Length: 55
Image (cartoon, rainbow, N blue to C red; front, side, top):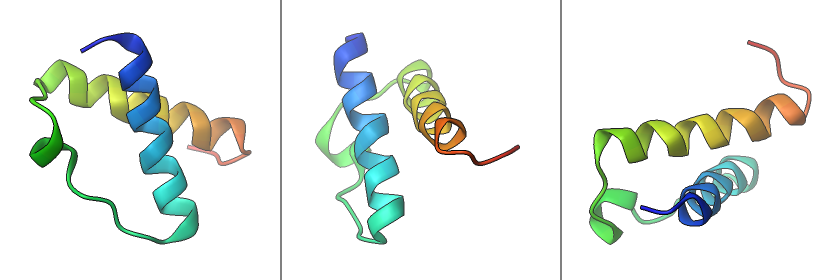
């Protein structure tokens, strides 16, 4: 999976969280590896931290 798609999917999950709207599971739309899923979750975390959330 390329970096652009990883960022897009992380952004999609972040927007879904903000809007409180569900999205179709990523695993049903893409053939994800564990590494892909980890990178997507890191992108979502980046967005949350940039918005001022704290760990």
